[in-house]
Every structure is written in structure tokens, then in C-alpha cells.
Length: 197
Length: 302
Image (cartoon, rainbow over all chains, first blue to last red; front, side):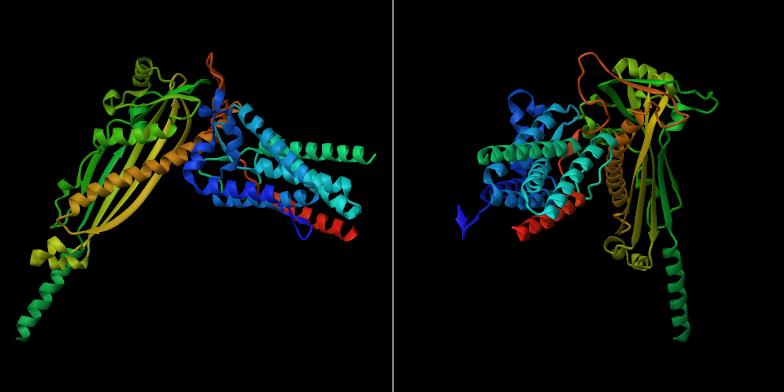
């Protein structure tokens, strides 16, 4: 679907609308958020749906804002990459959350946002003709991964966003999302070159 | 005429002075140290701690609470202001704390312990008996200090009409509550950590309503202080979990600590509440700005 030749980012818009609706509807949030007690066995899908739920408005604005922006970038360039990076991020964060025994409850779509950011940055770094654009995009990606890695293994978190009472940030989700998004973009670049070659 | 006016003015001044100076203080306290280290008992050194997860925790108010009243105005009966915190009240507050921590993976149970089970000055011997009877590893002992003040304001002059004592809120009441929680590992006698909660509230009442208002404010203030304590306990547990990973209870000079899992337990290793969120922050938003600039540079070169 396009308007005046420009692709409409309906995938990103759809995700943002659904996530915003779930976040302002407490009953839906309660039903979809990840709870380890409910997620054992057949309830493991909550590790995916929990990423649609946001406990506070600033958290939703930050996560969904990045998804809207990076998703729009990717969809205008290559919609398949946007879909692939989004799904890869969703899955990678889901596995990380369910595989981390200390996580009893999880919400937030920062992993998907990190995945879309990483995919946009790497795609730009690999395909742009402008060297300034390549350097800036590559620098952004390195900083994102370095920050997530530092938080994961160095401890602490630099977020200034208001979290729900008693909640901590899970840097592993950001790291998993970033790596998944970068892998999706790298794969798309390889396929694109093979098609051209 | 002039003489009677002077008499009226003098009476008014005397009444104002008498009515405005009444102050009642009700103080309710209980102290963990009096319970654990009664007068004359030798100091008990803490040993190294071995915590086996999941924990079985007991929560109790230190026994031997007292209530004292000081001062009284002509209008308010001090003995009607309420005495010691009742056992029912204590159990309701303990249940509030227990409920807030029961869902944690590393806590197998949280049992409120009635004060009747704790002998005043019973010390760790009493705790050992409880630990065996209830299967506890850790106990949270609560101390409290609640002070209530009443000041009779100048509006109390209307009390002389008798109707005023029923309708004019000339009594200024204030309640200050402080609740302290000390978390002990029973076998090692070690204080794992301590934290506190507090509440200050005030209000006005008629002298007739004062005893009822005092009791209601006392109960409400205890509830709010306990809610504050619950929040601080959650933070304290998190800090304790971080300290425990360093191998000491509370840093250098405190007993060593080892945290191990009971057979079949595979839950969280740290003392966290297990609630996590995925949330990007200002740094990531700044990076998105960088990406926008990169995108614009690409567009310009195309």
C-alpha cells in the first residue's frame, strides 16, 4: 500500500496501536503480561504478548516512539526487513525472558524497539552511499549494543524513564533484541546482494 | 457598667488562657532490643550466615509494648484516648506485611506470629523455640513508636456554651508513627538488615469526638506507616541481595553469608521481586536522533 509513491508503515502503526490499546486497558494488560507462574507449560506465549504491555505512560512513549520511528524507516526501505527484524526481536526477547529464572514478571516492548533500531542502523550502514550516513549509523549501532552489554554484565541501568513500582530494567532483553535485529539486517543484506549478483 | 465590662474582659482572658494551653500526649512504644537483649543479658555475637532458599519467614511485633499518657486538658478524658495496640490490630498489620511478600519465589512462607508467642525479654532462646515449632529460618521483628498530641485551640472558648463542645472542632490533633523492622537470621543471631516506615498526620475534632478521632488516627497512621515500611522492606531486600553476592551480610566487618538453594529449588538466586520491564531511556532516544541524521545524510547523497 502506498500514497504518492511512499509506502505506508502499516505494520509499525498496527503494532503501536495494539500495544497502546493494551497498555491503557488494565484487564488486557493483566491477561497478556508475562508471569512465570502462569507461563509454565502451555502459557509460554505470554513471553511474546507481555511485550505489548507497558506499566507506565513514559515507558510506553519511549518504547512505542522508537518502534514507530525505526519501523517507519525500515518499512519505507524494505517492508520484509521490518517484519523480519520485528519478529526476530519479539522471539529473541521472549526466549530471553522465559529462559531467565529470576524473571517472575515482564512487560515492555523495548526489545522489539532495540531490534528495529539495530536493523535500521545496520541496513543504513551497509547500503548507504553516503559515508557520513554509514559512519553515523554504524556508530549508533555500536553504542546501542555496547550500552546493553555494559548494563547486562557491568550492572546498573542508565534509563531515566519511570518504571512500575518495584520493577527493574532487563538489559538482556535490549541485548537480545539488538542482536536479533542486526542479524535480520545482515541476512537481508546478504540476500539482497545475492539477488543482484 | 465600666466595672462589669472589666470583669467580662478578665473572664474572657482567663478562659482563653485556660482553654488554649491543654496538651495531651499518648505514646505507644515497643522495642526489639528490650526483647532480644534484656537488661543484664550478655552480648550475643553473630555467627556466619547460611541462608537456604526458599526462606520460611516469621513476622512479629516485639512483645512488651507500653502506652503512656501525659497531661490532660479539662475537656478531654485522657484515659479514653486508647491504650496499647491491640493484638487484633497487630495481627492485621502483620498480615498486611506478609501478604506483600508471599508471592516472592524465594520465600516459601511468611507467617504472622501473635505477640502471645513471644515472651517479653525472651531473647534468641525464645526465637529458637519458635523457629523449631514453626519451621522458621528468618524473623522480621517490628518495633514501633507512636506519639499523639492534642492542643486545644482558642476556639475552645465556645465549649463554655456546652453546645460548642459538641459542634466546634477546637481540638488540634497530630499523630506521628514510626515502625522499624529488623530482619534476623535465627540460627546465626545475625541482623541481616533493618529498615523503617513512618507516617505523620493531623486533624481537628470536637472535644467530644476527640477520643474516637485519636483512636481512628492511631489506627490509620499505623496502616500508613506499615505501607511505607513494606515499600522500604522491598528496597532493603534488593540492597541486601546485592550485598549478599559480595559474601558479607552488610559489608566489611559483618558476618560472612552464603546463600544456597534447598534440594529441588530452582528459583531466583538474588533477593529481587522478579519484576522486570523492558524500557528504553534517553540514551536510546538520543541514538534514534543519530539515526535520523544518518537517514537524512543518505537521502541527500541519493
